[in-house]
Length: 307
Image (cartoon, rainbow, N blue to C red):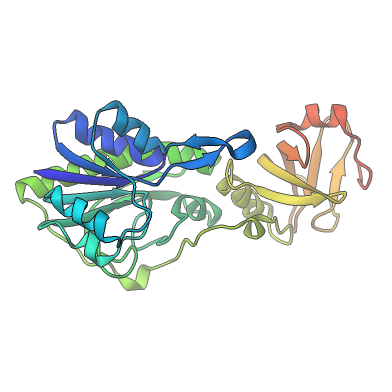
């Protein structure tokens, strides 16, 4: 079975690797074009998938436009039986409908829950205790195709989006391999998604990451860990943006208004919520490095605080 793989970031690499390592004929790898980055924005950065594909001498295509005639002709020439998509971009029908078997996608949620660009972040922010991965055949509407395979795992109470990302990345690779084997053997059955269970996980922008302390400590805590380490929850302190990477629920209710900064300027830094306080454990103030709270307070004296 001839397979074309499509993906770009680190999350997609284990899925590609497991196909290669298990002897599947990956005849082409489609990934993002190289970008300029680094200090000075003058270094050409390759995607994680491209780096792996280059190491394995796989054929690499990097189209700017997925409907470009030259790209479509080259893709057609690969004569793929199946396309596998992991963390790529939205495909036009002329691409996903090209192989005779079709195109499957790996999504980092238990569809139809958390359709969209940021399922890992939203699952934690919404206080879920379980998530997983889903493979499905692509259809016209994003993340709506018939389900092929699902695997679940628990979300730990103190887990961040970064930690969950890494566990789902490995589970996703295993699920892609299982899915391809089912397809190869013709032993799979498809299940339509239940539209009654749909919830969305849209792309997250900087303005979406501002912390609202007019919530319970648990809600604020989930918000912070759901955005850690990226794109990172933030609030404004003394006119500067403070990113918060790690926090903990402080049992005692301060009796202070939500959002009030509470600190001894030595050991602790807390924010009042509607039902208690939240301890800041790791932070980054605008213009400074990321550090733990004690190290931060050793070099910075807050002004508008209450003990």
